[in-house]
Image 1: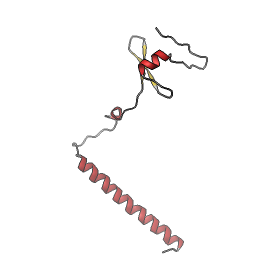
Image 2: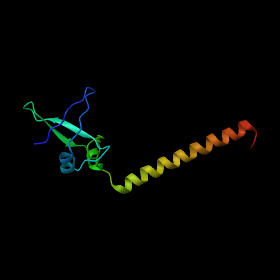
Image 3: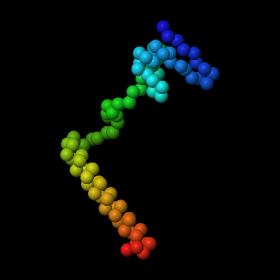
Image 4: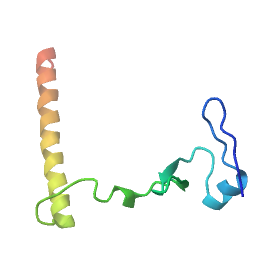
Length: 97
């Protein structure tokens, strides 16, 4: 069984055999998970887009990819118009127009 020593700063070095089995490398994050019996286990915190599932709540009916694209395009069009208005106002203030 692998073991580690906690430093006075509260740091812990995960033994190489544990890092290898978990696929951990320098800079990776881990999570200490309580199993409910007072014991903890170490779990790699590997990022995945699937971890974001359920993060944003939507109470309406499902929408299609095309509807998403249309919404994004509409927003970009509105944003583009706003930027043009602000730029023209800026030019007018400077007397360039």
